[in-house]
Length: 226
Image (cartoon, rainbow, N blue to C red; front, side):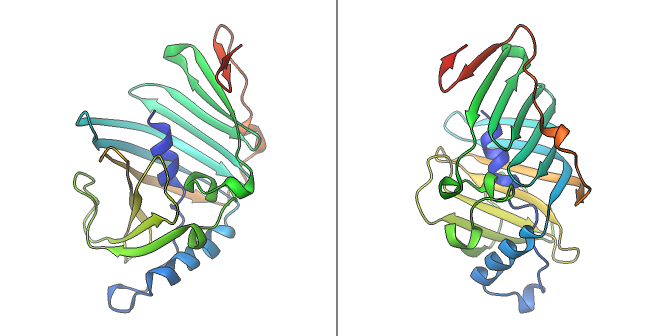
């Protein structure tokens, strides 16, 4: 499912300002600044393009959509092309809605002490500096094709994660904006998100994160079909 790498990447779209390549801070210090920076962001929204290249089957896909995040624990991912799908968290439950499959998968939001997945950091859980080792990446992974004139930070989880090996964050050093976010999965594939129209602290309503199960769909909770 393409949702997981997307959520993994989006957790880092609030990178703090860099001081430039000649005086850039130590990677660990930058990770701590990132943790402090995103703690001050209550909500944000953006458009995204999500690409995946490589893996065992050497696949290549491109998807588009928009996302909204609000602390604590609320997320709304809407994929609009080429296939429509939604992934919504109301802070308690996570709903994965696949219209073509006529199916909704419901899972519980992990508790704070289990929140090592980067997706949950942005939603107000976890600690980036604590849970990752940071180094500067010389370039984006092969196939990621980050935009030119970016600085890349590589984030490796301190404990083994089943879904990914590491993350690479590509930042424009002139504007301090995120240009590309890439995760390397365990099959050797690279999943990249690029963002536009990023807006912070807009006062997004809680109603945006309420999910109503459509009629005529199967609901699967904890592996059990309802």
